[in-house]
Image 1: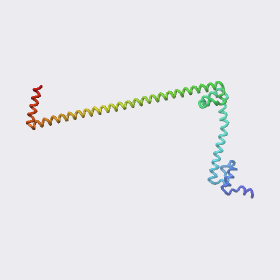
Image 2: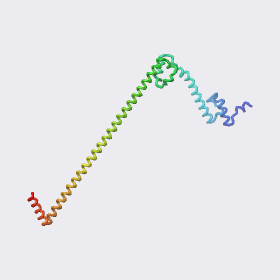
Image 3: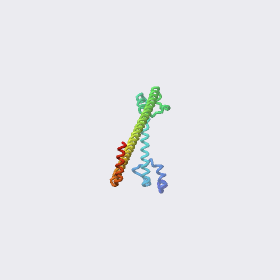
Image 4: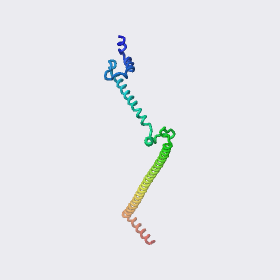
Length: 200
């Protein structure tokens, strides 16, 4: 009777206490009555997933350690070629602690510095080329605008000359019309023309 009372779960708080104590040993396919709620089934599913991940990690740990071990020169060089660029020259791992590997690391560092310098040089050259292209483009635009302005100015001057010529022609026509309407003025004009011819 006392044992049955101890196993009886009447509140949610008791459910969670019992789950934390016995959850790892429960069979997910044959859960007790006190586990027959959505919350507790979800908790059981989460616990199972966590346990499987933990087991997988423990199983992979020996393989990972074995993969990290370097026992032959071939393994040493393969590891260097795959991980060399990410190594810190001042804190090399144990498998790099040989004169040959330190020399290889020094060579890799020098090559990386040369490569960085080359890329920096190329970047600067590209920048200068772009700047020259921009400058040429700006000069072309400026030249085109100057030519356009000169063309507009020439057109305006031509129109002004046409206007002045037209005004002069109209003034001459008006003068001739006035002469035709006024005989005395016409006689004076003829006399003036004759006198001018005589002077000439």
